[in-house]
Length: 275
Ligand SMILES: NC(=O)c1ccc[n+]([C@@H]2O[C@H](COP(=O)([O-])OP(=O)(O)OC[C@H]3O[C@@H](n4cnc5c(N)ncnc54)[C@H](OP(=O)(O)O)[C@@H]3O)[C@@H](O)[C@H]2O)c1
Image (cartoon, rainbow, N blue to C red; front, side, top):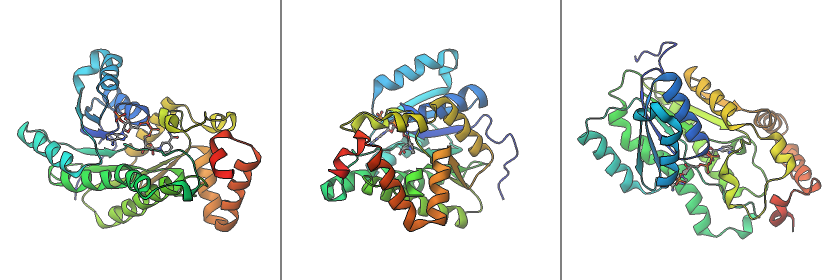
C-alpha cells in the first residue's frame, strides 16, 4: 500500500492539463510556490504559458509546459514518450482542461458540438489517466485528480452536453476511486469560479452569477487543500453545495427550481434557452 502522510503533496512532479489559465493556472502556482512541486502544464496557448512563467518569477524553474490538444489520444502517447525519454517520473495527474459551450437549448446543439465537449471534458481525462498510468504507478504517492463541476451534481438548463460530460467524468472517477487502492483518485466539483471559461458565451455573465462566483485565488487554495486531504469528492463553493443538496434531496423539484430562478432573473446568458 502506498503511503500518503500529511505532507505528501510536497516536492512532487505534477502534470496539470489546462494550466495556461483559470483554475489550472491557480493550482499550478500554489503547488509550485507553497509545496515546492515541479509542474508540467499542458495547454495550447503559448502566450498564456509564458505569462504564467513571468508571474512565477524566481519560481519559474519549477514550471515547464507542453503545447498540445488534450482531446487527441495520439498527443498523450507522444507526451508519455516525452516523459520516458527525458526520464521524468510523475506523481500526480490533474485533469483540469475543460470547455463550456454557449448556454443553449439541447435542440440547438449539433452532434459535433456534443462530441467536441465530451472529447475535452471526458475523453481527454481517460486518455491521460490510462496512457500515463504506468509512469504514475512508479510513484510512492500516485494520484489522479479529475476536475468536475457542480453541473454534474445538479444539471442546469442550457448545459446539456457540458453537464453530461461532467456527469460522465464524475461517475467514472467515483468508480476508479473504489477500484484503485494503490492510487489516490479524487474528484473536484466547483461551483461558479471567476475565470475566462465564459468567454465562448454570446452574452456576458450576469450580476447574479458574478455574485455567486468564487474568487479564483480562494477557489484554487481550497482545491489544493482538498487534494492534500485526499478528498474522494470535494464540492467547492456555497452554490455548488446548495445545488448538491437540492438535487440529492429534491431531484425533480430542483431542476424546475433552478430553471425558474434563471428564467425569472432574466440572465442574458440564458437568453437562447428561454427564447
Ligand atoms: N470556472 C468555473 O466556474 C468552473 C466551474 C466548475 C468547473 N469548472 C471546470 O474547471 C476546469 C478549468 O476551467 P476554468 O474555469 O479554469 O476555464 P479556463 O480559464 O477556460 O481554462 C481552461 C483551460 O483548459 C485548456 N484547454 C481547453 N481545451 C483544451 C484542449 N483541447 N487542449 C488543451 N488544453 C485545453 C485551456 O488551455 P488553452 O487555452 O491553452 O488551450 C485552459 O488552460 C474545467 O474543466 C471546467 O469545466 C470551472
